[in-house]
Structure formats: structure tokens, C-alpha cells
Length: 180
Image (tube, rainbow, N blue to C red):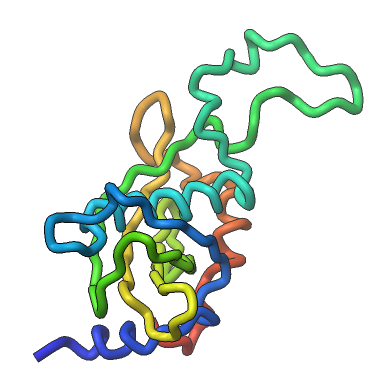
């Protein structure tokens, strides 16, 4: 018998997610059983969450190769700094879980939804819903947790996640009383 959370997740709608992307499946996404390989779902998780972090939370995953602020020439008054917010922290995945309700495969077009189920001092638990374009029923619901750590030490900083990151994540946070 499935746990009660399974039934709740199976009833997810696109409107349960505050951020959306469309993904075209590719021929090599299929496995030998003619459905999307499980590893592809993980790629979808990473893609939507990291896109959101870049676009809405000021994180810049490519800043690791940029010079540090002390090596940068100082910006002229009124010009932004070349170092992006979030350059000092990265998110490490510490937990993943997925519930599958129906198969998808190439050449399906997928609509992927993202929300935040839990936000703590240094971590975020995301939920991703996968829908097939043109169909109402959710095909898969996955959750995973990022812990934000200092890039240099790979440890959680004393202040937790950076303020701009938290502000962006709060916009997707499921309101109290909503079904997790």
C-alpha cells in the first residue's frame, strides 16, 4: 500500500508549481524499455532548479573561474561589480527521491514545474513535477535537497544561505496549509 503522500503527489496540477520550463525529450533519453531513463529525470531536476537559482536568486555557477573581488579592477561609480551574487556559495545535493505515475518518452514535450517545499537556514527542499504537454495528469514528482555551502571550504557558513538566494527561494515556497 502506497503512503498517503504518494496519493497527494499523484494529484498535483501545473498550478501547484510557481516556476515552469518546457523540455523537448531527445532520442537518446529513452532506455531499452522505450521510456525516459531515470537518470534523465535527475538532469531535469538540475536544469530547472539551477536555471531558477541563476535567474531569480543571483547565483552564478560560472563565477568559480572569475577572479576574486580583490583581483578585479574596481568598478567605476554607478557600474555594477563583475562578481555576481552567490559567487561565495554553491548548492550541494544531499537527498533525492522520486515517485513515478506514468511513463514519458521521446518525442514527448515535457512541462516541468518547480516549487520549494521547505526552506531552512542553509538548505532548500525542492519539488519538481513532470507533465506531458497536452495531458493533465502528473507523470512524476520528485524532491531533492540542496545545502548551500561556502565554495572554498565546502562547509555551511555561519550565516546560512545568502540573503538574495533566500529571497528568491521564498517566492516559490509553498504556503502553510498547502499539501506537500
